[in-house]
Length: 359
Image (tube, rainbow, N blue to C red; front, side, top):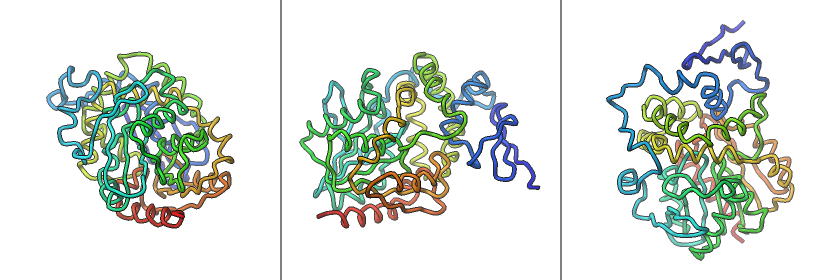
């Protein structure tokens, strides 16, 4: 028998035997690893004191409490933001949005995933801007965009918010791509008649509910954490340790460059950004979206990283059977952040798919 590999994380560990994952002796069927989102919730729930107050943290390297409280600040946190020259701030749906608009040509809408921001497109945006008018906002509550009320943090609420932003910009996307939860927002927008693109691309899209035994814990725990202003602050304090963010990023199955890791760490160290991610997860309803996927008529390219530890790559195959017009491309060796690992290759796939559906 294969020897068990024990990975300890502040007292909460996972053991891998015969390609099955165990947590304190519990059996999680069908996947070698528990998705990163679920691991974070388990760590917070079962080992919150050790998770938050790790003795490995070096107080000399952490930002001051004042720099951790509240929303990211554009003057300080955005001073070297990727593609900053294309950034603008627009008021729509009662929010002040940070959005980047670059290039000329057919409008191409990009939506990032939970806990990310426009920095996720730092290398992909300039490539696409050579051929398209690229529009990439920070989703509500993320990055430098204001956070709305609870209704605005639901899947339909986010879809309506992005649609209001596009109306304000007077832009109608002909093509769109979403990473992780961003793909779900795009699907919701299409189903609600808010956009009518010629083609949609899902990059490791989070379009289906998690199937793990602990999945029902996510929304209730997120609601508990999101209601407490202390939890995002303590999480941001912990995430200010670069080693913590590095472990979380490696847990996605991706290896990204130092610049990318720097921006993820910068956002995670702000309690407003962390709190918005929790609020988003607390109010996400993918089960309702799944019931409507058969009505998603737009051609969809399902790009799946073979090493994705956040969204099971086999979800793309399941989705291809549900969607009326879908195709699948697997990217061997790449993880959940495949578009950040290999932006040129992903951009080529996106362009080819869009050109095939341009007329």
